[in-house]
Image (cartoon, rainbow, N blue to C red; front, side):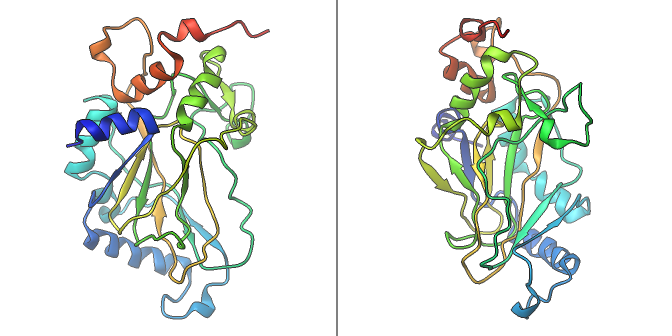
Length: 268
């Protein structure tokens, strides 16, 4: 169970780190399968010719077990609400990062998108959107399947930036903004944190948290999954008993200084 201090950190800084969220034995089992799919030899760095290899949609039993441990499910209940999230049945994208001086071209600061623009093709992910109610996304998870130190391409997090994004989104209501629009929002004044830890560590992040990849300057490849936790229903940020709000909602409410309607303006 998350402590009160951890819950308060999630609301204030937009993330909480869970050590030993899933067993290292599961991490090792999953890594073995991932290594096989990279086409690289784990014992021969000469075969590590790309800065990043992206692998997709792992739904084998070890991956599902890793994403649905008792520790994680209890944390989901606390942050999102019991019955208000959907268990993971796969782990989405694995960006496997290798030691390299090459530019992978994917290290920009961003917020993950949640839903497609109704006027654009769903396949055009540059038009996907985020709204102040966090439609379609309950959490971002950074799941470490290998030990990750500061030189091993840990995800960079801008602590507290989720509140800046909430304030930016509030005037746009249900429609929200595209990820391209949000990429123009400066969050450089927020402190930078590295998502480091031993294999089995999971960072549970607010959906609005600004984050970025970085080059790998260490020695061993980094294995990490970054799946969303999907909501079962919608979030609310006004009109309810204050005791009924969950931390994902409370972070947005706190960022706006109260009901979202007070922060909303008409968009021409």
